[in-house]
Image (cartoon, rainbow, N blue to C red):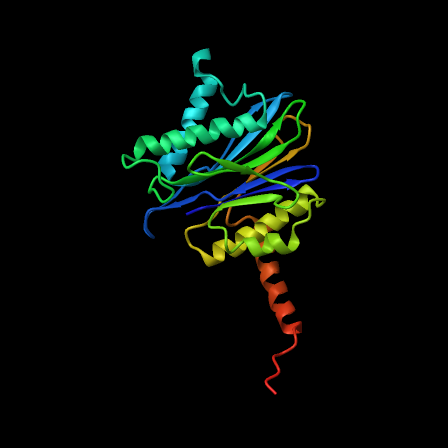
Length: 244
């Protein structure tokens, strides 16, 4: 299992993903689930991956290979004319990889299942954010749905629902995501650090701030401890149930 989130703010995009993969409690590995394709001054595209590791790795490898190959392998993610076409290319590739490995045909419940988040900006167009399903189709973030989660989503979602604000700063957005990740990590052992974080400023058309936050990171520990204490304090201030 995994946990990945992307936020669409008024002034940019924020991405975060854990790096844990599990094949049983005694077989835990670290794999990157955030992948960026960029041409400085022209485009920035980031992909988050969740699901079957072989499927996601092969999908990303195929997309990377296409971006380096000859013209007959176009369109690559470095040459798509819009973020909509980018989402189409990624969706088609994901669907093809799943179908290639599942001899019973395309199924939503396939053991080769994977879901992706694709976000970024191409010069002259607004930044856009998409969630891509195993079938290759996708939906786009909007004012009503300004963020996407994939993987183990249920534990961190209440944090986002209550505290997300499209006008919040990048720094506040990262804080929000770390609280969401901390809640998920504490509830599900299949999600864990390091946590990869990236944010992109609208119209910058270049890689923005990127970092990897480890389990012993002082700020992450402060967030985790502070959030737990704040919840306990808030709980104590709520009125007790009256059974009369």
